[in-house]
Length: 93
Image 1: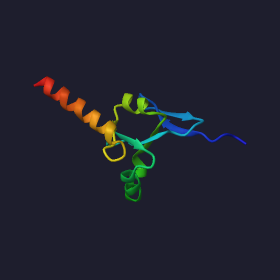
Image 2: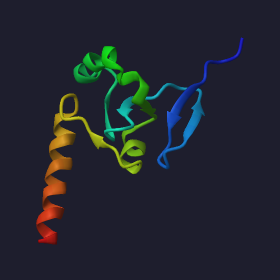
Image 3: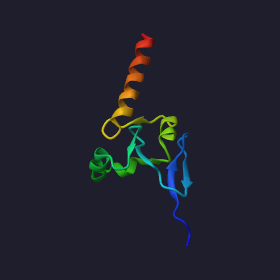
Image 4: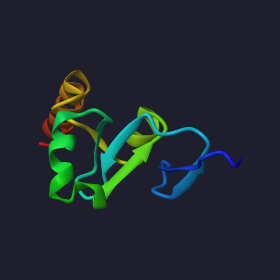
């Protein structure tokens, strides 16, 4: 019996086949990634969110692909991302 293949996004935005499922999900349009059990993402599924959903092998791949952490299910990571963003903006001024 053939092993199930999972479709994951790599750091270049290309879909790759994997023997293991992704650890994180994301929204292709909003460029957000988070846990697979994220309450916000689960609430959005009935409203068509699945059309824009992508999966990542790990957090490093999501970040390399230009995605930011979810403010709901990854609060600590989101705070660090937001702080770094605001710091970069202040440096430009």
